[in-house]
Length: 286
Image (cartoon, rainbow, N blue to C red; front, top):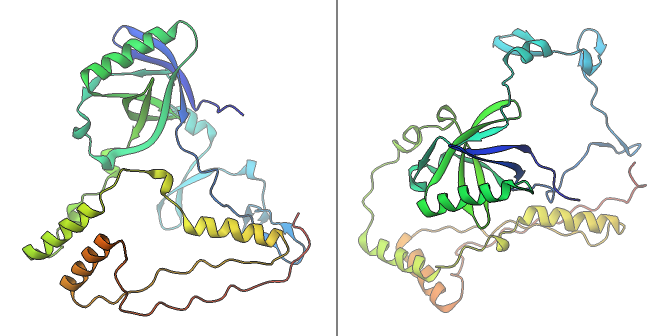
């Protein structure tokens, strides 16, 4: 099934305008998700809105409330939200250009692919894209996405553009609140030298295809095993614990291990993983 656009409108640079569509650049479809099941009936549980005084209530009868103090709420209905709803201009208006390094990576958020609509807009899109590439800059603009105004950064990628929503300044915590209390320690020069050599030995190209979620993989394997009748359950053992006493020795051991292609010996015995608990197979859940 072809992906559906998240947003459709126009990309505008001064007097140059072209129709574009935004597509979510990432997907969580491969993640394992679960539903709540009653093990006695194998029925999926429904979440019914319930008033503690009157009992179950229709979701359509509910309104939203903002808590201003303990147990005190300001109520909002659909009409209230309509009053502050932003009018979607359906236009990404580029208003400035900056160097990529000028944007703190803490502000980068969700990525979207920006694709020109088929037709006469392709040439205008190419003009904007190639001009941005020639300038070597990141474009800053804004758009209304899901009824909220979002600042975005656009960069050239291949034949298209990638738009990243940018977090507002008030959403980014000050690093000083966390780093200021880190004690000032002068690292030993020899240790830093060894650590630097270790880094050099582990230098590699960035390859996200090698990133694995071992927990997610173990869940998928267990699901398949349960589908086969509960046999062959797999375990997800925890990494070996280590008790490093001498930092210099650990660094030297790591350096030697990296050079020889072997991992440094662990000083503490690995914890014995608890065996997976097997359960009797039940009838297929609804």
